[in-house]
Length: 354
Image (tube, rainbow, N blue to C red; front, side, top):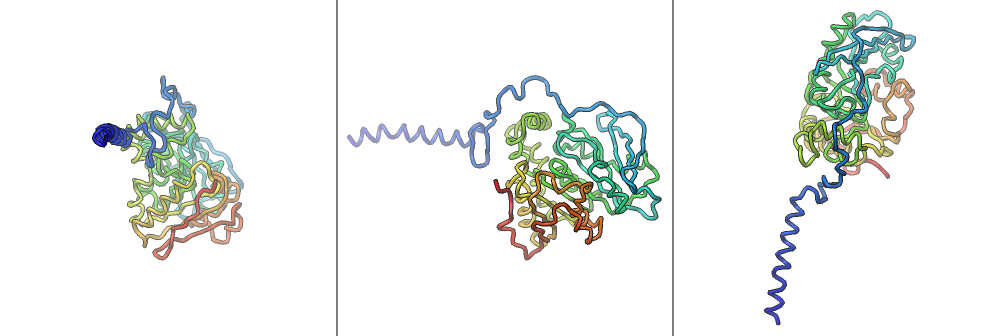
């Protein structure tokens, strides 16, 4: 009888081992590092040609000016993108003649957006004395959903060249450049700072996705499809592309840079929750505990701490663009502000509270 049971159990054990090994290697089987298998996405999501609903027509090759506030002028002009398209370049700057070179805030827009930095900054550039610039941007396959596209970052790296060609009267301090953005724009600002450090002495990232392999599975269909097109596959089929578009990949580079780094996130943010920015902060601190950087944690909605046009001047003060005393104007004055150094313990860093 014992011999019979052993004979019966052997093939069952063998089957279990084979099944376990298959599950460990099959990308369609969810695991701790595999939040949703590639089979979790319906085939229709990727059927047919990709249609980018954020696509826009080419801009006219002209430059126009208007007052964005009593102290600020906004110029809307154009640039030639990497693929030959003519797209918008927007810049806001002080209305009155410049007596000195001014810092440049290089703004990256959120997902599905375009160059609207004049709207989000309002009169702040003229009031506080700095220049803001942004471009529409276009990725390899998508426009407003380019998610860290190398082509879009390369176009952004030419922004000084574009500004000097279209607005030669601007006096820009090339040693005081700030790469800033929220949501996808925060992701772009971090990647831009890593790949073009000479053009980003300061990086400001708010509510940013930092691990695109994880973020992919939680995106709405149109954005997921856009990122799929950008990388020509899912995180399982194109891991190198997703890694290159994830700021978390470059935590070591950020940890060993001398750039001023400012990171904001909210405990109420359902868009880029706990596995995102706090994870990057911890990775940077672990890679180089002596590297100073600034964390601000609050309770705003996704992107709510961003626009200076609504007197959210907290991050402008952190970036050195306004005096400390102006912080009192901010819409979100409360929250946790952590100046990270070698003595800081980030073990219980606040993150998303569902």
